[in-house]
Amino acid sequence: GADGIGTLNVQLADLSNPSSSNLENAKFGSFFSGAYWFANVNQSYFMAAFFFISAYFCPKSMDRKGFRRFVEDKLVRLGGGFLLYSLLLGPIMILFCRAYGGYPVSYEFYVGPPWFILWLLNFTLIYAVIAQFAAPVKMNMPHPVILLLFGAFLSAAFYGVAVGVPQEWQYLGNMVKWWYGIGLYIPFFTAGIIAGRNDWMKSIEKMETWIVWMLRTIVVGFWILMFCLVGGLLSFIPNFNVDMNLAQNLAAPLYAVAMTLALIQFFHQYFNGTPPSKIAKSAGAA
Image (cartoon, rainbow, N blue to C red; front, side, top):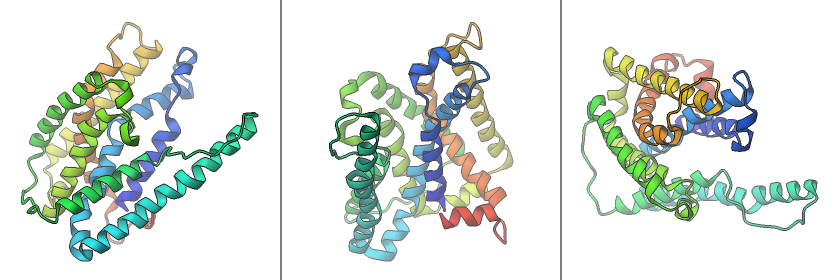
C-alpha cells in the first residue's frame, strides 16, 4: 500500500514534467504553468519518501524470510521488473517511436523511468549484506524538530553536490542526479531502515497537534515559494527574480522531511479508519 503511494507519486511527477523549451510560451493560465509548479513540488520530496517507505519494511521482511529468501525475493520482484522494462518494454517503445518518426530502427537497452527500481534494488541488497554483520541500530524516533534540523543539514550536502560535481558524473550508474542521491535518497533509505527496526510509525501517528500543523505550514510555505519561483521564471509575477535552482537546492531536503512526515500522518488520520475507506483499500491492493 505505501509502495503504491510512492509509485503513484512517481507517475504523477513524470506526467507533469515540462520541457524547458516551452518556457517562453507559458502563460499564467496555461497547463504548463501548473504542471511546472506541480512537478517541482513533487520532485523535491516524492522519491525520497518512496525510498523511506520502501526501506521501512526491509528489517521485518529480512527477519521473517532470512537472508537468502529476502535477496531472492528482491532480485525477482525488483530486478525482474527492471529487466522486463529495460530489455523489452522500453526498447519496444523506442523502436515504435523511431519507426513512427521515420528514423532508422535499431534495438538498444533502455533504462528509462524505472531507474529508481534499480537503485532501490541496489540499496536493498547493500542493506541485506550489511545486516549480516552489523548490529541493528536501536533508536527512538527523534523529535520532528530535530528531524527538520537534520533536513536543513542535508541541504548543505544537497547543494554541495549539485554545484560541485561535474554534470557528466551526475548520472553515473543510472542514478538521476547524484545530488538527490547523496542529499536525499541515501539518507532517507537509511532512515527508513532505522525507522522500520524501531517502529517509528507509531511516533509519527501520535505527533502532537502543534507539530502536525507546523509541518503542514512548512509544506504549504514551500508550495507558495515554488509558485512564486515559477511565477518569476515565467514572468507572470513581476520583479520576483530569486534564483530558482539555488532556492530549490537549499530548501528541498528540509521540505522533503516535512512533507514525508506530514503525508504519513495525514494518511493515518484520514485514510486509516475501520473499516478502511475505498481509497485505502485501493491503495493497499496496489
